[in-house]
Length: 472
Image 1 (cartoon, one colour):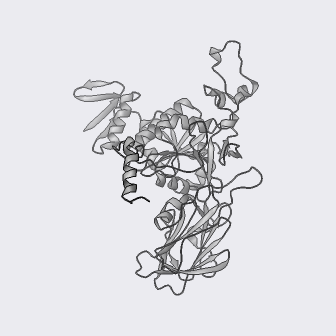
Image 2 (spheres, helix red, strand yellow):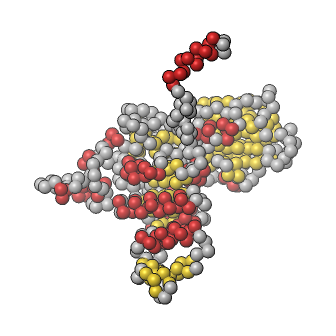
Image 3 (cartoon, helix red, strand yellow):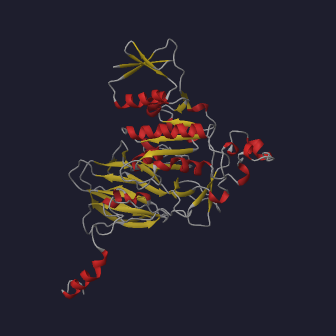
């Protein structure tokens, strides 16, 4: 079946004619994404204007500040100017998420016209025909460096895997842009916002740092009121172009700094290997948000690993593998392997063995300043161990004598100056109190007490149990 798009809307000789600017055209694009057998042919002799532009045309990124707040341990986001370049990352193979992304982008473009939207190349190729404005993208080869220089804010639509993927794009950057996450995945341990709140959430992030004088009230409705000098200097593309009431400098977006680990893989002679050599801004290693994993993989024998903590030998671990995780990663693979759950605000590193011998090694929680080294022992009977960073295989194994060195990322530099980590935008609760990093997953029946249980009969039932000595 072929749909032909022209300047009119209607049926002509049995062919559906579609006007490109209409809402119906966007509906057709959504249908085409769900039905690959359908094709869309434009009834025009002229070539369509290119809607995917190179990210190099955009202005340099803005570096926000993170200030301590008096109402909790979270930080307050302060933009020096309105953010301009927004990077969106979506969950793959999810048509509903793609439709939500288009809705989000259309809202941002219409409400905040100065904002430029950046998409991954695959996403841009899929959705740009559904948009009436250009989007920006970057090739795979220059993805990381270009994003580091251009992105002001990252927005994710998906689950925890989508957030980890977005964070991995900044794995070699010491200053990660703020991350606004909408829970559209399976679990949502890391996602704070529901997509139904996207207008409120984005406005809160966009206006964070704008004082009362940075917003122009609806001047046409207030006779005798003229814009201030600051508003005139900012022009129509600044905060003054956004209608409505100012949030004020004390109601900025709340930020939870999720610390990362810096990982380096070294040979027996102390040389860092090629896959992650000198990739960070600070010289060596790459950053991970959740965990580092070494595992025996397909080898039938248990791994034998020498563990060094703070430069001193700790133990010889005999296990399927070892996990070194952040507090954020404590609810991931480490939790499944028997590790502790650690609050994201607790500065620590988790060292968790996978299926160890009972007397060999148990899970540990160490201070965040403790460097950890894992060396594959000569007693190891297998060939090499698999190395994964945030669930992604490194591509090179760990042979006998090789070492994995892990350092905690330093996030605070000086008084009230924060740099490093992954700044996660937190959702405000009722009464404008900031969350402190705990996430509650609601079961569909969690709002109930005992189902169909008459509360007035509880005392009588408890008394009967006491008499039968079931409860003493």
